[in-house]
Every structure is written in structure tokens, then in C-alpha cells.
Image (cartoon, rainbow, N blue to C red; front, side, top):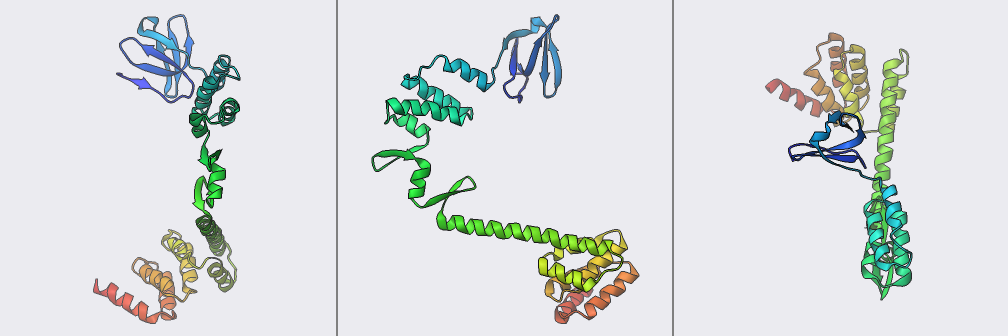
Length: 271
């Protein structure tokens, strides 16, 4: 096809002479067809249109299909059940598959389509079969109970970490906003809440506002480990503000990780 526009669910399709089609809301006018597509409106004269394909929404189409199927029609209900399943109409699909099972309990294709499994010569729902085999449903997947429990614990830990990280950064913002505050208490609370938030706090050390940069360095200076020492050493290379440079030198001089700091400074000088 030379060109086509698709993407509007359950819209009509205007087929053009010589190939090509447009999908959207089609309105017949005096001089031709107006097509409302997601890209805008387009008008085609009658002489350019091959035919107008009217597409019904699934609910309307289902009503029409239902008229052709009686409750005791095994094949008809099976096919209609498949159609409903394809169009995400799960409740209606279950209704038609159950009509099939009422007449033919061992209708294999219908059982498979309805997600049944044969277990000990009986058809049972797949969910029941998986539970018998020691599986549980977790986030749309069947997992062994032990693995599912582990996943739940990991996700819970990740969720708590994320919440603590947000809390830690809020406390850091508190340092920036408060003119008078007990820095030691707030920083200790940050480290207690989220001990690995250094990278996020360090990001503020390159802020255009000197007060923000200073607050970031003051926070990192309160933590006596290699991670904070590394970040402080790294900042020395880029800081140009004399007041902040002085605070950096004090922080590094009083830091417990003197061996690490010395090695880092030697490396910087050698480059």
C-alpha cells in the first residue's frame, strides 16, 4: 500500500482506489468523506474512494455474533469463546466455554483454550494444577513458593530502601532551607535513615548555588568512611569557591580515612 494510517481502536476504514487506506471516524459529506484520524482530518472525494469498511466495537460485534449461536451449539460456543478471549472479554469467554463443557466435558480444544490442564485423568484449572505442584502466582508469574517468598522479601527491601532514600534527601533539603539548624543531628538522621545516599547528596556539591554546595560538603564531612572521603577528594578537583575550598580542606584534614585521602591526593597530583 502506498500509504496508510492506523492506530484508532475500533475505527472505520476508508479504502482508496489504487491502494491505500485511512482509519478513523468517517463522516459522509456532500463533496466526499471526512476522515478524523489521530494525525488530523482528511477529506477524500467520492471518486477516490473504493469502499467504506465500517468496523464495530467488540461489544456490538459480540451482540451480533451471539444471535447466531444457541446455548446447545457446542462448536458455535467454542468458536465464540475463542473470539471473546481474543478480544479480552474473559467473562463472556468463560460463559461460552462452560456451555461447551456442560454438553461435552472432555472437549479438549475448549479445555485448553479455557486454560485447563488434565491431571490424574481429570480436567482442572491451571491455577489449581500449579498450586498442587507447589507454585504460587506472583506479579503475573508462577513461581515456586520459596522463590516467590524470596522475591517478596527483595521487593519489600527495595521499597523500604527507596522510601528511606526519599526521606534522607528530604532531610538534606531541610539543611538547605533552614538557616539555623543542628547540622549534626540532621546529618546523623540522614545516615541512619539511608546510609548509602552519598551519591545523591554529592550531586548537590556541583550546584550553582554556593550555599547548596557547602551544605552538601558539610553533610559528607560528617561521615567517616571511604565512600565519603572519595567524594570529598573528587570535589577538591572542581571547587573554585575559596570558602568551600577551605571547608573541604578542613573536612579532609579531620577525616578518619587519612591513608585513603593521601593516596587519592597523590594520584591527583600525578595526573
